[in-house]
Image (cartoon, rainbow, N blue to C red; front, side, top):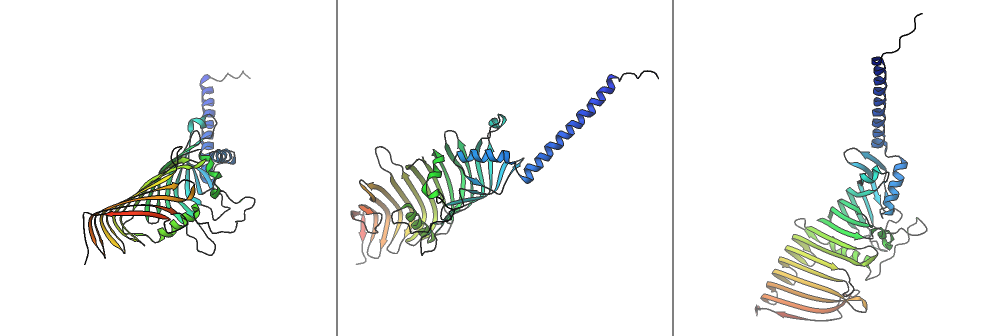
Length: 368
């Protein structure tokens, strides 16, 4: 038989092209299969484990039913719970979904680093239960937010929106040393057991008792038009005394147990303590009209300042200044009225310990 002629260069190119094409199709099939797996089943353990550990180190403890990759949104956790479910009397935050945004530059270097967490369909609740009384929860519904995890253990809260007691709540803030939040006593689960400790009534003057009083007061307030509540919070998680809160409430029409406010604008500033001054509060209320069982006022401006009394942790010094274009009571009517007062108040007693006030008016008249 004559010797076989060697394969031509063209024939070898066709063979290698077929092999290359098969390899490309196999690679595409593997990528599509992996994509379907992480999209429908979820991310594998060797990715989830370091991701959750990195979040835990940044102070974010998260539980979920499924963690999967969506091409148009990134890594998405479903049916999310933040913190521990061991204590039902502790604050709880849940969400329908949470998007984890990664630092892709770090990911290309083999490091998983979460840049931010975005929540959708969230719900926050703090039961504030006492013995022998029904719970008075503080709750936020329809919560959406974006939390940026910055270097040096800093959190920045953005795009926070929620429904709170019939109001539209908008919140922003910056917290340094944020991982210390998990060490706050009321956020930690009971030590040593998953059993919940017996519920005890919070002592008067404690933060939990004051929050319960706030929840009870909110239940008795109704709004003709949903108000807007905008707050900005800053502080160092290692020191609660450094936290400062600034906010405004715009309420076109509000009915409270103490009266009705029309065209109201409420401003509050809770200022953190410094080396020179202790923590203090400044509250301002401006209203087109205010009606109470005792008096009616037009063009009302009320300014209140509260400062702690040195050496007394449960006493505050109050200073009130109120101005109104017209005030009417069952006993008298006054125009351009100006009232000032100063007093010392105990947080555990409804009646001030001491104080004095002064009322001035441009003109006044009585029915008699």
